[in-house]
Length: 94
Image (cartoon, rainbow, N blue to C red; front, side, top):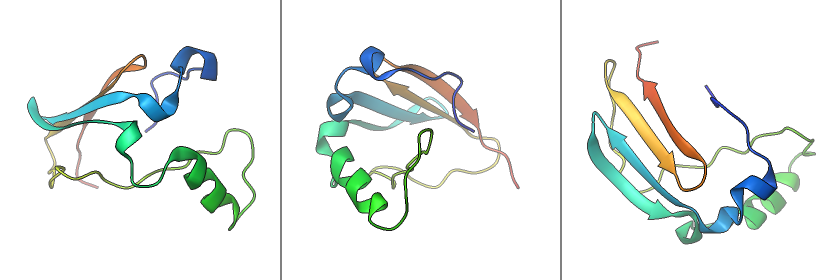
């Protein structure tokens, strides 16, 4: 699931400098900043485009940051990004 909304680049500001946090069932699991990513976003885009053609609307999903642990069916994950907003995701068994 992506969303529940989309934002334009002018609304986000510098995506390489966004504070974010992750909670599972209200318990803080991670608080960090996109400036601390191992591979910067421009580098991720360059790397991905070396394997395939990126088109408008394509989404690049990144890996898991440290501090994140297993979640199980019934958990609720809450992620919040500075200037973007908050999203809750219920975890369901497949």
